[in-house]
Image (tube, rainbow, N blue to C red; front, side, top):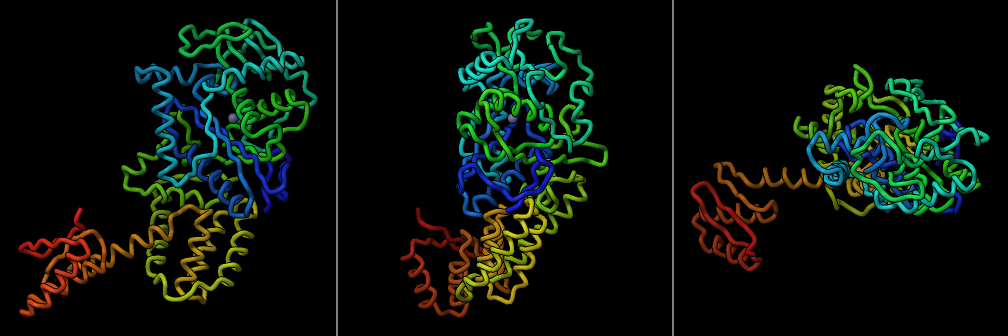
Length: 483
Ligand SMILES: [Zn+2]
């Protein structure tokens, strides 16, 4: 499997520190607001990546943080505390806001078929570990106390790593947001590890520390959480391209200085979702959330399909028309899968194996998900029986997560029900969606119409013996399973 690495700016074979096992870390959401669909694009693509690694047979340990403290409105340690902004906006406590938006985030993930990482750690739950790491950085001379805060000293690094292949504008975080310089910093790129003296007198969450009562900086949480759950050697770090600088740069600075050895060789960044007007962002007030898409009649998995149609390292243009097209294509694909007959013969294992290899080659080339979708269309045209085609679709879906065969089965049942439940004279069967039962109920109605009451009673008794109750109405028959 080949993956592009933002740290080396090259595509290379994916290797891990321990063969067969992947230590994977993902920057999680700052839970002061709903995740917008641009954020969700990152989580969808990271989910596909994790599933692909597992599909390849690798063991994956995936860790994610939940930022519920310390993230200021500018990523460069200035501006307002995002959690406090959320609490003020909604007249709730910071912890209520954190809980509400954490739940909302995972509800979105479930709808989008995004698997929950093996470990999810809220930042507020690991304060002693952050303090230990900050103390370690002070002890090793990589940090200093100034104006009451603890800062990381970037001048002590041989190299302050910057991922330079992302948007120019992302390098200008502090400048862009027009915020004041922090006079305590010795060097322009230094960043806060621990806040004590700050302008946030009303900061809701504070903890005791060797440097006074305060709270951690945003970057330290990812370094410390990953160290605790992934160990000293991380294989793969994921995030949105927004996080590349300064957040990931600062994580590398902290972790490598603390550990005294290289930390994470492989970086995976998902690019922006843009609209024709520009980047989608909460601060600019034009961010769409998943609930809005649902209210507009879109299946969340149509959005997943839309994201999978393009490459994660390209900006993806969101318009309603583009989403319409994706939803149309997704529905057609489900309909084609629904037209296949399950169990029409044995699954051809040789075909399945060959398809699997082809799929791995396509998607395993730097997560080329659009080729993965092409592979699904190709599978539908295979010279094989329907059972084999369905098995191939099911197999690909372990990575794509589009519920292809599940939705196809539901559509098949629905279609069968619609076909079986109304006869020519308009007689209607209402039941629990089992076409075989519907058909029996219809046969009973036909027997009654033909005055063959013995046959009608026989069918009713037969159904009763199977726990099914019939109720005749003026326009048809309703059936239900006895509870
Ligand atoms: Zn992070």
